[in-house]
Image (cartoon, rainbow, N blue to C red; front, side, top):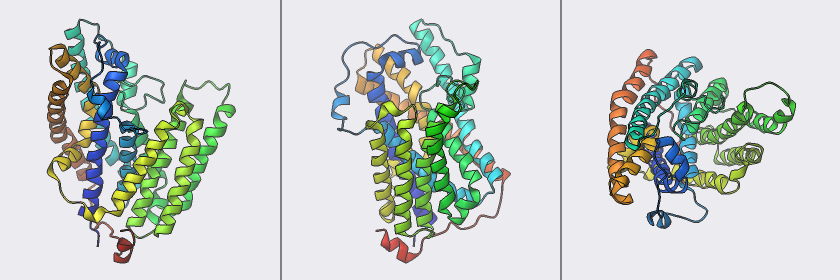
Amino acid sequence: MQHASDRALFANQLRGVAVIAVLIVHWCGVYWFSRDVVASYIHAPVVEGPSSSMIYWLTIPTFNYGPFGVSIFFLISGFVIPFSLNRLEPAKFLVARFLRIYPTYIVASLIMLGLVYLSSRYWGQAFTMPWDRLFANLLLLQGNAHYPSIDMVNWTLAIEIKFYIMAALLYRSIKAGNTLPIILFAVAVLAACEALPGLLAGWDLRPGLVDSLKTELMCVIFMFIGTGFYHHYTGTYTLRKLLAYITILMTVFLICWPHTDWIVQMPSVPQNYVYGLLVFALSYSMKGYFRPFAPLDFIANISYSIYVTHSIIGYLSIRILMDQGLSFPVSGLLTLGFVLTLAYALHRLVEVPTMKLGKAIFKHKARPAPAAPVELEQATK
């Protein structure tokens, strides 16, 4: 019989894999292939010279570490969030989730901006950050308000927030394992992707609002695939029903894609969401074989803090260290140590206390996590 600790290990270790994939794409890919963008964010001159040979032996045909890692994060959220909804009513659930996301993200962003200011001083460049752009980003509304991201990664957190809201709205359906409302939501998003641009033509809306919402809600459809695995885990869905549910949501998700402003990413990015789903499904089917592995567990446990600190801070650290004459591999290793140290401190000083605060505010008698029947567990192996 599968217990809650087994569930946590399976999902938690996948978080570690996902954040490692994201680190690789940003530090070994974006850093070299988007040099002008990176330079503008860290207020530094564009890095010159050939790219590190390291990035070539990390390259896998048709595989992109970034969307692969993000897809894993999304599926994990879809899988674990129903466990929270099973314990908290919607309003309390939303407050608890906002406490989980915002304090850590805001503190990480302020630290990042402080280091970017120091980077600008190091390079002798002017530092600017308009207040409206800053507040839109700190509220994770930057895409909806049509402001540039301050860190190039918070778009996923904006999608997480939308998922929490939709999960709260579909609270009763998720608790009951009712598939229809989630599928109707997915179909409604598809219809909106098709029809809204024409229906809202001429309306005086904030630029980018409709496009950003279409993209975010499309990703929420993908996240609800993880919820199907939750229902299979708890015995609500048979394996056949799970496969049908996944097929429907994945199909709608992929049909939505060309109707968003992500159309330019086809087919290379969507196929990596398919890879992520396959890895998640395989890991789920083998969850009973997962065992503690200290290095991966450590990274997984602080994965959120790593995610919100690694991007811009990583770029400016690597750039400055290379300017001091260090090679890219050495600069990357030193930066990894710096980011892990910073992330661990953020985890201990902000992330854990605010998580405890959320639990203290809504203190309740915990119910044991539901376990899948033995015969269902055997059927998935």
